[in-house]
Length: 473
Image 1: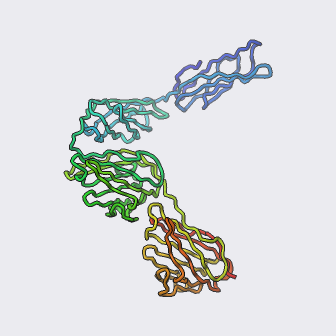
Image 2: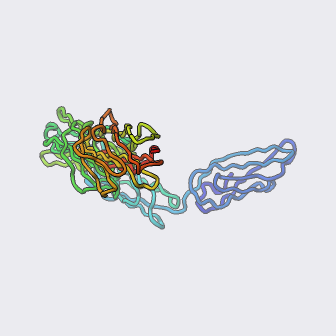
Image 3: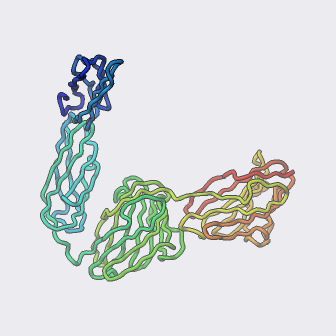
C-alpha cells in the first residue's frame, strides 16, 4: 500500500510491502520507485519512504526484492497519483455575441485564477459538441456552435505542474441560422502539413454566389497575425481576380486572373501559383481552389471570410489548421563535374520552384574562378529580360545584355569570352537548361573551380555553390 494516496507535489509517501517465501525468511533489500524518485530499504523494515516528488501525474510504483544467493528476485506494482499543490478557479465571463447564430463564431471570455503565480497551460471551451483550446493567458477563446438551442458553455482549465485544474460554466443561447445570411462553409483539407497544397474554400450566399463581393483565406496564428509571418489570399468575386496581401510590402498585390501564370502574388510565408488555382460557382456556393507553395515554417490556423454585396461580413472563422514547410530548393547541376581546356562547352540545369515552372522570373549565374578568385569568368542570365550578361573585372561592371543565340555585342574580358551565339537557353518541364559556350584565356591557366548561383521565382537566392573543377594547362 501507499500512504498517502493520492499524494501532493512535495509530499513524502511511504510504501508498505512484504516479502515472503515458503523456504524461509528472505533477507537483503527492496528497491522502491515511482519512475521519477527511488529508495532502497531492508526486507525486515516492511516499508520504505520515497523522496519528495516535484512532478505531478499518474505514477506506477514498483517494489522490487533484490534477491540474494538463496532467494530469487521478485517485484510488485501498484498505481499511484501525485496531484499539484496549488489550486485554481475558472470563471466564464462574457460571451460575445449572445445569443449567437448556428455557424457563427462567438468569443467566450474566461478568467483563471491560481492561488499563487500566473496561470499557464491551456483552457478548453466547449458547448458539449464543438470545442476549442486556447492558452490560459489569452483570457478568451472562439467557438462555433453548429446546432441551435440552449447551451451550457464550459471552460476547463487543465492545470499545470503547480496547480490543479478547474472549470466554470455559463448558459448561452444559439439561434437557428437565417436563410439570408452569407457564410463560410469549409476548407479542405481541414488539417495537415507540407510544403505545397491545393486548398479548397467554399463560401455561400443564400441568394446566389454571384451576390458575393469578395472572399478570403488566411493562414496565421490568429486573425491579427500573432506577430508571425502569415499568408492572406483574397479573391475579388466581382472583378474575378486573385490578390495577396504582402506582409513584407504592407499592401495587396494583384490582381491576377485565375489560371494565368504569374509569380507576383507572394509574401514571406507563401506564394500563390495562379496557374494552378481556379474558381467555380454553382447555385449558392462559390468554390475557390488555391494552389499554395510555402516558403517558411508555421503552425497556422486556417481562417475563411466573406462579404456580400449587401455589406454583410462573416468576419474571420477558423475552420482548419496547417503546418507549413518550405518548398524544396536546389540551386543547379552542371552537365559535368570536371573539365579541361580553353573551350567551355557544357549544359547547366537549374530546377524551377514548384508551381512556377517556366516563368520568366529570377536569374541564374555560372562562374569559373581561380583559387585566388581573380581572374574569373562570370556569366549571368536574366530570365525576365532574356539577356546574357558578363561581369568584367577589367572594367568593374556587367557587360550586356545580349539575347541568347545572337552576337549583337561582344561579352569579353581578360579572363574569357562568351560565345553568345552558341550560348542558348531552353526549358524542359520544370528545369531551365543553360547551354554555356565560352573560351578561357591564358590568365586562367591552372586549376579553377566551377560555381553556380540562382534566384528562383520565389525570390530565394542559393548563393554560390561549388559544383566542379576546371583545369587550363
